[in-house]
Image: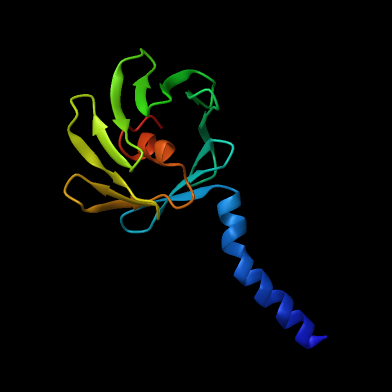
Amino acid sequence: MKRYLILVVAAFMMLAPAFCLANGGDLRDASNASLGRIDNDGSVRNASNALLGKFHSDGSIRNASNASLGKIDSDGTVRNASNATLGKISSDGTVRNASNATLGKISSDGSVRNASNASIGRAQGVKKEWAAVFYFFKLF
C-alpha cells in the first residue's frame, strides 16, 4: 500500500504542470510575484482571484462588467474601446506600439521582456496576444 501511494504521488507531481497549463497560466512580475492569471477560456483574474475581465473568441476584450475594453484583430492589431490602434503583436512575439516602435517581446517559454531586453514578467501557458494586452497595453 505504501509503495502504491508513493507511485501515485510521484505520478501526480509529474503531471501537475500539465494540469496547470491546461487551465491557463499565471501572470508574474519580474520578481516572480503573482499578478494574477489568465484562464484558457480567456478569463483574466487578479492575484486575489477576482475577475477583471475576459478575452472572447471574436477578439473582443471586456471588463468584469462586460463593458468593451478593446479588441485583438486577426492580424494581431490591438485596439482600444474607441477602435484606435494601440499596437500590434507579431507571430514571433514582438510587441510594437501604434508608431511601430518595439515595446518588447513575449517568448514561447512565456518570458516577457521590454524593449531593452530586461525581464518584466512571465506569462507561461498564456496566449501571446493576451499576455501582450496585459503587460504592454495594460487594458486590465
